[in-house]
Image (tube, rainbow, N blue to C red; front, side):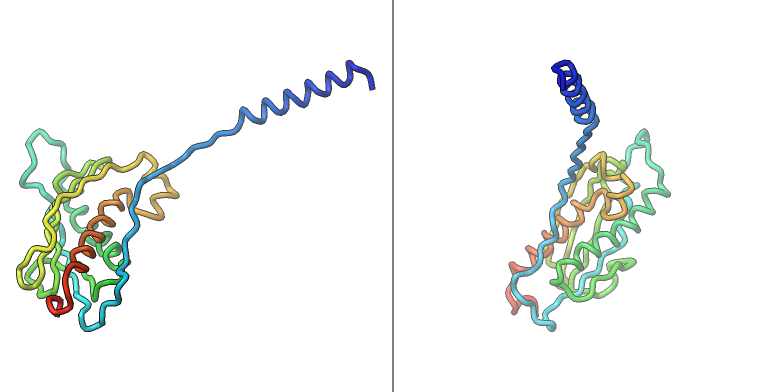
Length: 187
């Protein structure tokens, strides 16, 4: 094999390597979604508290006139979001029955009420208040999140809600409040 032939083969291999390496496209998609915590201690079945989640207040009364809000979309979100929160709370396996309820007139061990402060599809802000059946506040907190630009891709959207991080944080905060209570208080 001649030197020219070896050089041409080497150049050809080098060209193929350069072209094929230039076609590599690596996209890292990241959305920071905290896992739902589970209780390390076993809660006796008699002490599992039932949770009622009210249909959220769509927050239409607190909006500015020049703010672009579609009331029918906001009302749909107010009915949809409690179901996503229900799934997050249930996944902690620390509660009794978890249900979405039409109003806080239902007698439940814990009632969670939410107000949509801001919802744009890119950002979500909720105000959550959770009270026990004695009227004691367990949670009174605002939650805010921004959806990743990858949250609405078909593969991601099929697995999790774009704002799953908020629902998981609420579920974790409720669990934290539960674990602070002793068995006498829960009974």
